[in-house]
Amino acid sequence: MDGKEFYVREVASVETGNRGYCLRIKAGLEEVLTGLEGFSHIQVYWWAHLMDREELRARVIVDKPYKRGPEELGIFATRSPMRPNPLAMTVVPVTWLDRTEGLVGIAYIDAEPGTPVLDIKPYYGMERVRGYRVPDWCAHWPAWYEDAGDFDWPGEFENAR
Image (tube, rainbow, N blue to C red; front, side):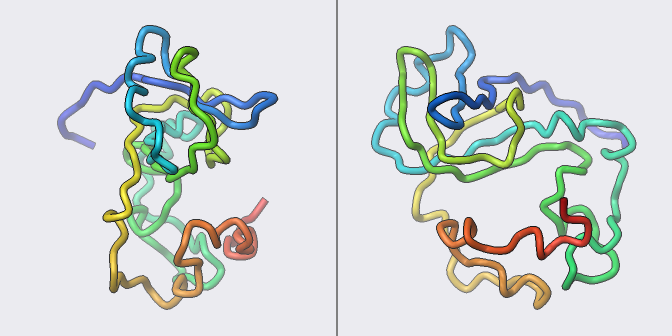
């Protein structure tokens, strides 16, 4: 694929420990957390490094990833980490914050420990969209983040683990 190349750098990484999931800010960057107190949720932009292989970056069509979906979908119609650029974003609740240590506690993230984090942004309620549309095959998915934890996600995928 021809195109411009861009430089990004890791600003944090995903960790797990006795306090659960957290994001560890890179040494020397701890000040980036200034003012994050008071936000209940953040958007975490992360690199799906385990999917960063040339053959996966080249995929443009995937075979029926969702049980109720069409036989094929273009990669931009999926949330798959197999992408031209394996960039992912997850909205997560902030459970605690330690600015001195450069740690952001989060309830959960769909990334593996060691995953590079490229950016963190506060979540604002104005980012919700009224009247959005989705195809019929996924219209029954939860409309709210808080309802997604109880949803049968493995039942939605063709090759669920």
